Image 1: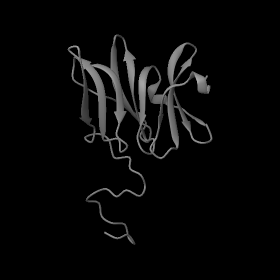
Image 2: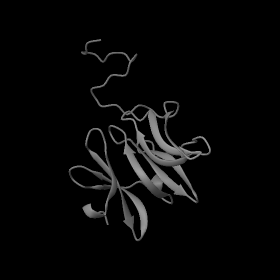
Image 3: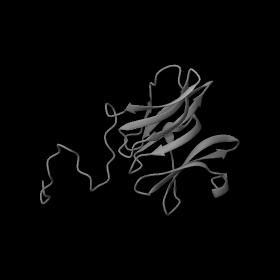
Amino acid sequence: MGRQADRQDPALSGNGQWLASLVEREGTPAVLLQEQPSGRRIPLPQLRGLTPHRSPSLSWNGRYLALLVQQGPRRLAVVEDRARGRLHRLQLPAGLELERLSLAPDGRRLAVAAVAQGRSQVRLFDLSGFLEPDLPPAWAVRGAPAVSGEAP
């Protein structure tokens, strides 16, 4: 499992530390998350029991892993918060046949490619109501107080 040739839909975190891809385990699709460059496999307990479909996407530091899962005849978008050990099942509008997704590097927005009423479309969803930003260490959050020794 997890050989380079067996992987599909690779996604690399913004900082390059995490690589997510889809693999098959005993004939069942699974998500493989590895730390780079060591290749150490990271467990994803919140995704147990879900059937990954496609399109893993990672936030900047790899805190958030978004992907499409298959649940019966429907595809659902989920986001795993690895820092808090939570799985968020996103409530997207009915009637969308989800094809792909992409998580913004800070984890606060999600782009979804879908088909609705026979037409392809891309929709953006704001996740800031329940996800904290996953920012590179050098980025300051607007409106946050400056850290001692930093210029405002």
